[in-house]
Amino acid sequence: MSESVSETRAAVLTGKGTAALATLQLYGSHAAQLIHSVFRSVSSQPATLDPGSILLGTIHDDGQSIDQVTVGCEDRNLFAIHCHGNPLIVEQIMELLQRRGATLLPAEQLLTDLWMDRGRLSAIAIEAKLILPRAMTLLGTRLLHHQIEGGLSRKITSWQERRARDDLPALQGECRELLAQRLPVKYLIHGCTVVLAGPPNSGKSTLLNCLCGQDAAVVTDVQGTTRDWIESPCHLGSLYVTVIDTAGLDPEIIDHAIDRQAQEQTLAVLKRADLVLLVLDNSRSSVKIHPSLLETIGQRPLLPVFNKSDLPPRLDRGKLPCELRGGIPVSARNNEGVAALIANIEAELGVKGIDAKTAVCFTERQEALLLQLQSAESSDEAEELIRRLGWDGGDDGGDRLRPTLGPL
Image (cartoon, rainbow, N blue to C red; front, top):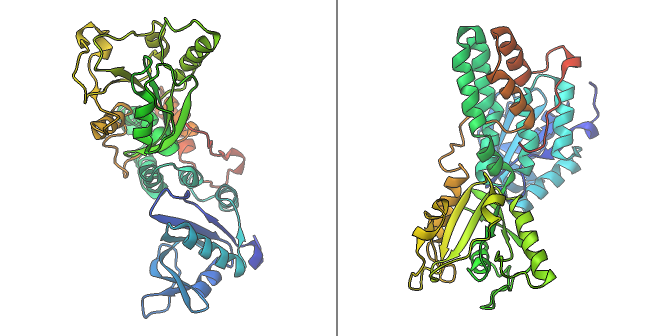
């Protein structure tokens, strides 16, 4: 397609604050000319922007260096600039590209245009690049980066080379492995919700403030201080977490309509949880477990937290339901045991030990096709599903699959 300089497009592919590095995409018939105008290679040789080349140098503006970068020539008229992730640096470079003739676009628009214009990038690569700006964690960002040329893209290529008829059961076993990690991958890319629940005055609000590093919730010794749920975002280990503090659950505190409503809200919030931390006061001889609590939690991951471990222990855990006897001792007030709690949160949500260079399933489209593939009854059916999973454009434009960008 013919383009003017103004139709050369640029976008930021990485989300703000998620990584030490940022990736800028530049695409268009004048992209190489624009790169030459702002990039100085560290090599004494002239920069050659051949497909597959990677150059180290600086982005400069009228002799003033902005940042040291690498420039990757991904294809004809398609470049990736990798710079430091400082938002001010990213803004400077994007503003420079705009002054030199590039049109600035949201990542989703540029990549969708690129996919439709060129029809030679795989659906997996486009999906990864489209989701990158919304990744909530560093590990999630790295996972998505790896899927573009490695990871799932490479696995699908290997499936195509092996051909399903050679070993369909083994291929379907690999599908099951990918699908087994879909929830942990979702948590790493899109974030997750952890709900603090338990009896009144067990220290839930103190634990919220401890985990989030700020006074998000009012803390007093008065039972029932929290009558509405409070949420606060934070990073816990490798996860981006929305932590929700709820009103204490006690079947005897229902004298007033406001108390009943607060406890009903708590039970409703529990249904949103990816993980429930059941906070119990370890300094009390007994605790009252709301009869609806375990039923509402259902099959959601549950991690008991025995708070106030700085006080003499009085709780007889043997009298608790069996699923609540194991747990993590903490003192939210003294910030003790919190590192172990965070490690257990990562383990309960399945993200502990995930390698950024592994193949992962990260969109609804991929999940739907992998589910069909793992139960395919013939090699011909499996090979068609593999083709659709990693579709690379080709000439059958009517069969194009637009990536599904919603979470898993």
